Length: 267
Image (tube, rainbow, N blue to C red):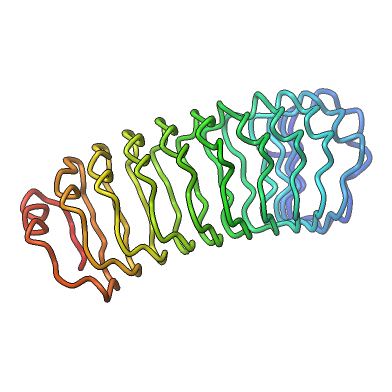
């Protein structure tokens, strides 16, 4: 993407304080990127650029996204990361074409709108580095998700519906306040990466043994006292990281079985 391509405008790192007015009325515009500027507000005419497919507003000083964002019905990628947004509009959930990428990292979000779960075709969601204490109860409706990154949030629990994300391949929950995982995670049959570094887990559910596609399990720096034997039943596991679990009483004998079949284990 560059300024010289048709239907593309990239104005990254230009020290802009507002979107340039010459973009108003650009009904042919498909891709707009204004990453790393000083923009604080968005003009009303932005929501008239209804042919936009990608919109990158990351790295600015935005505090508010109006509900008019729902008018961008062709949008398949939206990046709002690294701003100062404390609340998201319900209209975000009306972006039915949003399939590729929704990046909301490093804002001040304390909750996510329930409407977000209407994005059933979205494949990648990044909500890291916020103030979220919970995920929407119906997050399981987002059945298109293949990667969910929610690390560095004060999450206490996961909704049971997380197990309905059957297409999920990567789940990153590092440095949250999770003390337990729901048994419903056994529904994540396509999961390949489960990263739980720096949580507060004392135990894991035996249901973790149902994650037959799991290749990488990161359990570093938790409060684990024991491990379920079902981990040994994970046929695709390539890496198991158990370091800095100082309450783990002993290393189970089945660890050697994992290593014997080629799994890299760090204790």
